[in-house]
Structures are given as C-alpha cells and as structure tokens.
Amino acid sequence: MTGFVRQSLPALIRSALPDAVYEGELPDVRVTGVTYDSRQLQAGFVFVAFQGYSVDGHRYIPQALERGAIAVVGTEDLRNLEVPYIRVADSRAALAELAAAFYDHPANQMTVIGITGTDGKTTTANLIYHILLAAGLPAGMISTVNAVIGKEVMDTGFHVTTPEAPEVQRYLTRMRAAGLTHVVLESTSHGLEQHRVSGCGFDIGVLTNITHEHLDFHGSYEAYRAAKARLFTMLAQTPEKDCGNPRLAVLNRDDSSYEYLSQVTAVRQVSYGFDERADLRAVDVRYESDGLHFTAKGPDFTQEIHTCLLGAYNVSNCLAAIAATVMGLGLDSQIVQRGITSLPGVPGRMERIAMGQGFLAVVDFAHTPNALRAALTAARQMVTGRVIAVFGSAGLRDREKRFMMAEAAIGLADVSILTAEDPRTESLDEILAAMAKGAQKGGGVEGETFIRVPDRGEALRQAVAMAQPDDMVIACGKGHEQSMCFGEIEYAWDDRTALRAALAESLGVAGPEMPYLPTREK
Image 1 (spheres, rainbow, N blue to C red):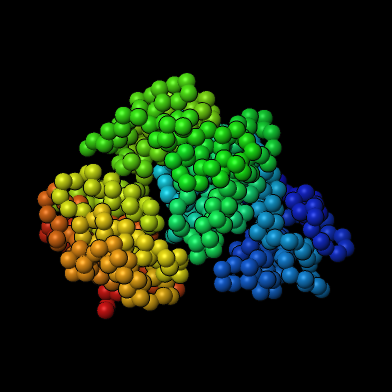
Image 2: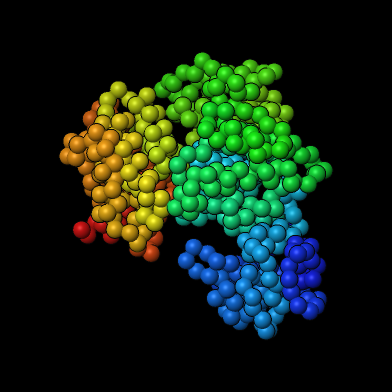
C-alpha cells in the first residue's frame, strides 16, 4: 500500500473520530488498513460496520474478529467485544474520515475537481481530464467507468456508482505517489449522500444537471437535489493547500437547480449555459457530421470550440469543462480547445458501431428520461431516416421512470423496442407492461410505433432487421456497462458487443457471438 502512514490505533481514532464514544484505553498497535468488507479484512485492520441496502454490517463483526480486526467501529450499542468498539453517529462518515486519515489525506496535496449531476458526469470528467493533459498538468481521474493513473487504467465496477471511501482514498494515494497534481473525481448522489467522497478536499465543484433519477433511494427530488448540493457545501470546508485552493462552484444556468444551488453555495460561483445571464455562454452552435462547432463567450475571452461529441447536451458539458479550467484554474482558452478536440469520445456515450451496414448504429448510456430525450433528439439531428430506439428500465429502481422514459421516446423515436435492462428480482413482464402504458400515453400504438421484446439480444436483432439506409439504431441504457442483472446473478453483457453481433449476423460477416441472457430461453 504505497503512500499511507502507519499510524497507531489511538492516533488514528483520535484524529479521525474525535467525538466517538469508547470505553477504556485504545491499545498502542499499528493499523494496517481500514475496511467495511469483512471478506477483505486482514490482520491489523479496523472494521467499520454500517447498514447497507439489504445487509447490516454489524452482523459480520464476528467474521471480522476471526480475520484479525484490531478495532470495530459501528452505530449499535455493543459491549464486551474482544477488541475496542468505537461507537459513532454515522458509520459511513466515520469510514470516510478513517480512510482519509489512514492514507494521510492525499487530496490535500492535489487540486481536486468534483463533477456531479444526473447526466453528463462521465463525459464532463473526461473533457476536463483531457484539458488538464493538454495543459501539461500531471492529472488523474476517478470516474464511474474507470480510474486513470498515468498510463494505468482500472475498472471501478460493473455498475455505475462512486467507489466506497477506502477505494477512493487508495486511488488518491496512488495518484499522489505518482506525482500527480490534479484529480478529476466523478461524484454520484449515492457517493455524496453516503460520504464516499467525504475527505476528498474538493477545490472546484461542477454541476451538469439535476433531473428525475434515483428517487427510489433518495425518496424525493428535493432530497436528491440536496445530496448533489453536498459537493458545493463541501467546497467551503476544504482546508488551505500549498498548491492553492480555488473554491469555485460551476453551476448550470439552464438547469432548474440553479437558483437552489446558487443560494446554498457559500464560495465563489460561475455559471454556464445558453441563458443570456450565464457567465459563460455558447453561441453560434452548429451541429455537423463531424461533431459540434460553437463559440464559447466568457467574461474576458472568446474561443471557437470543436468536438467530435454529438448532441446539444454535449455543448453544455463542454461549457462546464471550460468554466472549470479557464475560469477556475486560469488555463488559456486555446489550450482548453486543444484538450476538448483531443477527446476521441467516451465509451458507451453516443458510441458509433460500424460493421459495414448501410445505416448508423449507436450505443448510448442514456438511462434517465432526460438523458433519453437528449440522446434521441441528437439522433434526429444526425439522420434523415428513421430513429429505432432499443431501451429498457431497471428493476428495483425508481418505478415512475419506466413510464416516463417510454412516454418520452414515443415523441422522438419512430420505433421504440422495449426490452430488458437489469430487471433484477422484479418481473420483467411487469416492467415492460408499465413501459407500454407510458408509450401508449405518449401516443404510441403497440405493434406500430412500439413493441415489447424481452430478450435484449433479440431486440437488437429486430432493430437491425428493420433498419434501412439513412436510419439509426440506437441502443440506450447500458452504455459501457459490462453486465446485466437477472435475479441476483450478473450475466456478462456489453451492448456494443451485442450490437456488433446483431449486425454481423444480419450482414453475414464475421463478428462476436451474441452474449447470453436467460431471456433467450423464453
């Protein structure tokens, strides 16, 4: 574990958890790690127990002790453990503080740029990362897709979420050890609410947008918005750094969240958007075959921008990146343009799939109503023929979204094929029925403008079969993800591989096999 400080247990607990309750003296033993997962625990670790989605970590304290835990942190009133028990009000917050302290607060030696929002986080993070590289700054990135440290790229998980606090701090420590000076850190609402990015010393916070998503977890739009706002309230808590501390909030002037966020943010703010009141605006926008062209107009600079990215929403993502780097870090706008141009695209974001077919085939991660509308609007601008959309809606997640996504698609796609997307333990047929009701409310006619095809592989085959020259087939919802969940089993699945398989079959050319899903048997 390169870069961490071997602290004694008393020193670590007293520095990270000064208000914790524990009885007696803490033994003067060395801490070798901090974890919430008893399976990863090794001798000398501190085990932090918290209530998860379906499992209470306090149940695994015996296993943690068997594996050599030297202390346990939790919220329950427990006594007579064979090791010190430290009781806290919030185990997740304690985990973040312990992890940051164990690794000696690596974020305090780097400039940290946090990105949050419903849609566009990963694209904006990649734009900022490429701008930093173009400026010659040693930079790293932690996104929901991967972590990038120099030439090393590491996956951060099957599904989209911010890694847990110990993993985030471990990545930051490796970046510090590698001599990186800047970090781009994508921060989901779950990551913010559950303290996964607490202790990350944010210097600049960037908001893409806040739309309907994750209400199953947060309970309401207001609670979801408040979780996103944590990134901006945390800016004022960042300690002074030798490398500087801009403490800047970059807010979307076009988004409905702007007024709320501008009021709860106590640090310097800049806004971006199409709105004439924005500090940074996009004008003269042109949507062309090679991507987007527009002029970025700031308070004291004007810069022509070109990117291979597609869709009006990517104009906003570019503006967010420009605001963070030009107005936040003081980089030259021409360098910023070079960085934006250098980004070849983002995996699973309007990613073109070409196997020699006579129509356009695209995979996009759009999995919210707003993102689906944006993707399909971009699709309409790219082709003169029909737009054939393949998408689903996840099980054990916000149920209202199923109805909303299908309703939104009917007005933008010529044909919508409703299919599986991580049904988990829910009935796929019931999910598709709810989506069908949304499609019908939007004016769709089943069998004409939309159909239900439970097996996603077969849905892609049917989309490819009906596509004609000048049409587009767009598979939405999975993007870069590498699995799909049925029941409690993750099956290997990549929309890009599956779409290539469907195209290869249709064209009679060599290509990958269609990945297996259990719906194939039905």
